[in-house]
Each structure stands twice: as structure tokens, then as C-alpha cells.
Amino acid sequence: MSANSHVDAEEKKMAGRDVYLAGIGSYSPGDPIPFDHIEAVLGKITDAPKRLMKRMDRMRPIMREMLGIEYSHYAMDPNTREMTETNVTMSVKACNPALKMAELDTSQIDLIVYAGILYDYMCPPTSVFVQEALNIPYCAEISIHSNCTAIYKALQVASDLISLGRYDNALVVTSQLSSPFLRAEYFNQQKMTEEQAVLRWFLSDGAGALVLTANRPAKPCVKVRNTYLESV
Image (cartoon, rainbow, N blue to C red; front, side, top):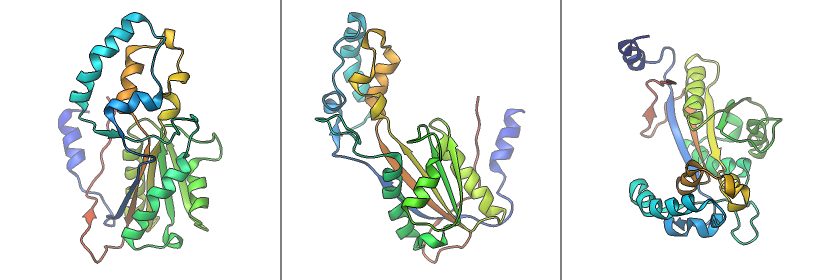
């Protein structure tokens, strides 16, 4: 497919019913951690190869300036090293404000699309646990296991299904728990790579949620004109 074809596809409006973004919500666990204190929470790398240790010392201020991250959040107790949240608990805490903004009751949600890179359990999927935690008695649910683009895929699936008329109100939610594999004790530090070291400076924990609906809200809202995915 040519580049022009990609552009044409992206500019096409969605067929079928209009889809509106009626509510948004987010949740960031724990206290905000300043960039310079990230390693105090995740644990210091002390046993990596000397070359990498020196490289990390040089890269730290460069990464701070390049990324522009002021604070990070972690669902982890820095003292006990225990997790304080799960993907489900964070997702629910992001969904509640999204539902409140959309002025929808959980009983009105007929589709949940959850997307993430790691699940709390292999089976059943996280979407089922989110449904249970929100006390949604009956709905369709889909879980998308993907990389950082998972939420975009969830948005496309949910908006397309609403546009087709299959569902009316969808809860689209994503979460990420990075701290379990960013902790110093997770690594075989002698085998640690530069790429793994860099991840510790810009990945963190949190969740976000959207409510999509076929019914245009009375208050100002965003209309979903199109969604577009590409893997190169």
C-alpha cells in the first residue's frame, strides 16, 4: 500500500453512527516521585558492569533534560518492596471519574475493552475482573494484549463497534504496572543492558479510561471522526 493510500484511509470518516467521547479518567498511584528520586524507590543498580555504571552516571542528567519528566508514580511501597495496586484496582480508579463525567451508570455500559502490556492473571482476562469490580451485571468484554499501542487498538475496536450499532456505551481502559520489572532486585545486574537501564527513567505505573457513546452528550464533547493504526 502506498503512502498516499495510508493518508486517504486516515482521512476517511467513520461509517455508520457517530461516536462521542463522553468521559475521561486517570489514576496515578502513590506519591509523585521527583526524577532525581526514582532510583531511591526502584532501588539502585550497584552490581552492573563498570562500563554500564559509568554510562548510567553520564546518561542520567541527559535523560532528565531530554525526557522532561518531573514526577513518576509507582504502585509499590519503597520500604517493603510490595505492590500496592493491581491492574484491576488502578483501572477501576480510572473508570470511576470517566463514568461520572459521562453521567452514565455502570448498568448502561454494554462493552468493556481493556488493553495493556501485562495482565494480573493469564486467565480470565483483565476485562472480566474490571467488569466484576465495577459491578456491571451484563456486558460484552474484550481484552487486548499488546505493546504501548494497546490503548489505540482498544479505542479503534470500541469506536468501530459502536459505529456499527452493535453497542451503545463502551468503557475503554488501559493500565500499566512497570515497577515490578523495573525494581533493582528484578535484574540479573551483571547481564543488564543499557536499554534496560534507560527504561527505569521513563516507565512508571498508572491507568486511564474513556467512555465512548453513540448518544451525543448535552455538554460539549469530542466526536471520534476516525481511528488509524499502522505497524512498520
